[in-house]
Image (cartoon, rainbow, N blue to C red; front, side, top):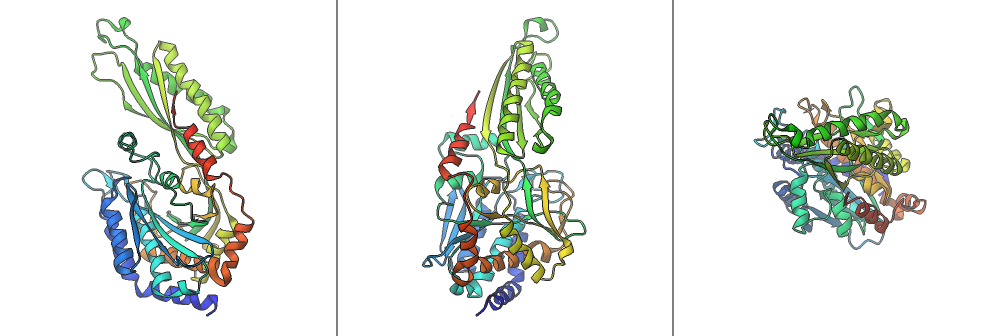
Length: 437
């Protein structure tokens, strides 16, 4: 069969199983779980891959998550389709659960899209005609939240890194993969999709301002006010903002997680969390070092001690145009008008696929079918076919493009590819920024 015929088989298989794909997406949407706690969601994915597709699945690959490999006997390139398991906190959303968790991140759509692509490739039988391996990997903990819980897991030796894909790289689950792909949901307005997003990376920070308690009314002069130190520190960073290069798109957005104990005692323990985001690795490091100095200066001004714990966050996402072009063309083949597909996007948020994009060619389009900003009360799925079915088809079709005819397209991409970092260099970078100052 030719490539077009294989794609037609994939499309038919996904269409024939449309309700199963939507059902699993809806089910995950109703049961959001935070990172490294996605036990029910992992089980749902495992049951689908095993029960519906008959695949052998490795379970709980990084506390949670799973991986299934097809075409194991093939010697060609290995393509991985990824989906993210975790939800986000948005207690204001109408569908949030009792602890405020929700899938306003759209990760339930990703998982269902990944499983839809798996249906298309496995049930159609086209894998027999492809010259390479294909894996389906459900990854945990993309949202960088609940840091105290993740620190507990780290202290117990269950994880090394707070981000799920970081942890999976360390554990070797990307060692046998050559190319990775996934998609994200986004309110596209009048458009349908976006290919080739670029994003900021970030370094995480937990900051503790340590002062000295005293009676706030009768003896404030005997205390050292850690809250004042934190306020000065934030103002110090604000004074730096105009000095950051516009091209780096630097962001610093702190929250106080503890601002004192009781109102009539001078605050002696004040705690802050924030990210330092920038467009390049050099920009991240430069901004982070300067912000550290500003934070420490806030403590020095009032005589408080400042302890900064840096946490390796995510790297900026890199674009691989050859991958984007394949996905773009498949969207058009599925009937999406070219004028409705945005080429390139500037995102100052962060994705942990950015880390993977420094190790191998990746693809990370944004697909419509929702309205309202991600992570907000306004998030809503309004077009299930566009949200779930279109990306499932287009990813599966892109796998065919890559692995058809002795994997000619994938081999061409890989022959021109030099990783920005080796795995060892990448893990060294993470280790360098996993420190207390």
